[in-house]
Amino acid sequence: MKPIVQVSLDLTDIKEAMEMAHTAVRAGVDWLEAGTPFILAEGLHGVKALRAEFPNHPIVADLKTMDGGYLEAEMMAKAGATHVVVMARSHPETIKCVVQAGHDFGAKVMGDNLGCPDMVAGARELEELGCDMVIHHIGYDERRGIAAAGRRMPNPLDQLRQVVEAVSVPVQAVGGLSLEQAIACPSYGAPLVVIGAPLAIDADSFSRGAGNVEEVLRKICEAVHGFGDVKVKNEK
Image (tube, rainbow, N blue to C red):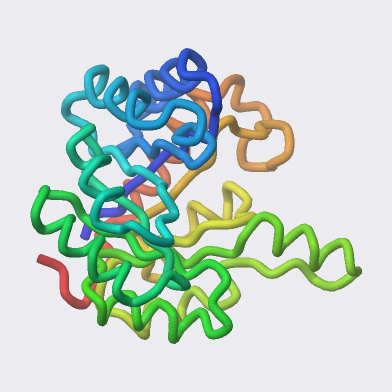
């Protein structure tokens, strides 16, 4: 499949989120994500506003669903989300409910393996339960806690190849990636590249001298889209 660039709108102010979304779309971003902070702040109204403003762009609702799966997925799909996120560590019945709602309301389901004792096994289970895509995710608190303890901070790239090999659906890597590492994900077999927003432009060598966020995002899109097709086992 052709690599996809997704921008995560991890903002709590709807005006700022809309401005960032417009910047991302001008730069060539493919998917818009209503990040968890945005959903907590704006809820269904925020997703509806994104859908009204960007009628032709896929919208990922990062719900991180743990229970009440059918209703949460239904509500977000009806608000305009094309993709919803369920956690691997929820009960299998919750994952099944989200998958069923996805089928019923035309949304794709992204299963997130954050916090799984065995990340590869968690990814495999998500696919077996019907998820359309897998998010291989090292959490913010986990990374900070391990680093504070003086140990090496884990990175999604550590096991990304193993996760890709274990499943036949598209994979996305999330959590503490530099821009260079995110851009490299297609070379690991993971075609879904997510970039967080706001971007820490000065913190990453890829973006030094780029000038502004739109230019940085445009360079990212050019690099990812220029990679070419990524082989996905069950690509439809």
